[in-house]
Length: 404
Image 1 (cartoon, rainbow, N blue to C red):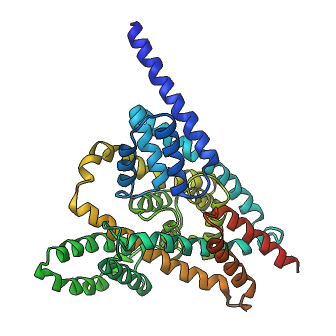
Image 2 (cartoon, one colour; image 1 turned 180 degrees about the horizontal axis):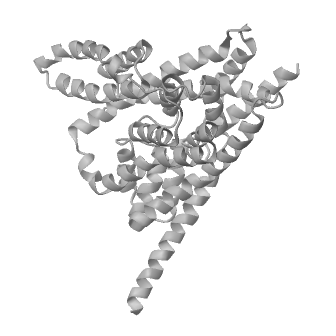
């Protein structure tokens, strides 16, 4: 009886330690997934010795093989290692909590005051800054992604996959389907090419046939935003979300702006911009968008739906990490889906950038262009600049331009 009580006490103590650690990290975790994971490594490997460095790196690699927000999934992985399913739930939820709460509060005020002139200038200045943040992410990640597994020289096959996916997206394919096609077909292409198989000659035919599938893949029921449909839409995004936080811009644009017409591009950019002000994962933008569409219940359902697949995938994947690390196909799928995600991000950044820089009413906006140039200069001249500061600078400049 005493041993059983001690075991329970130890388990509760471990869960409490997980909560305290990831709640703290959720409050201070600015700077994107790479910065978040660096914080995790310092806390759970260097300071607490909960995981070996090699196991930690294996888990980082595993998060790249499944959809969802990488830093949140790392929190779930660590929680599972420390406290099984209860630990996974506590770590994941406590890490997201602050970001989701703050974004929900901002969503409430945005719905009340978003069109008031005192708020508009800030959002006007933030939008071009967010575009540059996305472009900067595409560049930095792209330089690594096009090298693939070797990590040494540019892999022209990966570049070709990226170009084809970009063309598919420009042609009109939904962002999610463009990404899945790039990942699945691209991985097969890499395997076939590496084996010098004659079937390589059929690859162009596969791509051409994909264009004929557009009417089927793009068939989205453009109905009103019922709560069930909202939940299922965000669940679908969460289930296929590869490519890191900023790729959400592409997914939301394809599903919610172009597909279901629940948002305008302006509202989408505002959602991403607002989420930049809060710590923690960028998935909190789903909270903001859900609130704009269906109020508080919409915010809750969108948040739960977009993160639910991550919990499921991590709980399934965690015991299989050693095997996945050695998988020939999955390693190529990861290479292909990474460059595909970046191609889609680039296309969306171009579309959104054109909309921000050129208004159908006033024409070219030199103010927005100047903010974009200064934001780009910040990334070029300041080493490891935090994107939150770039957004803040854009907001201040937007307000100054409004005053003058």
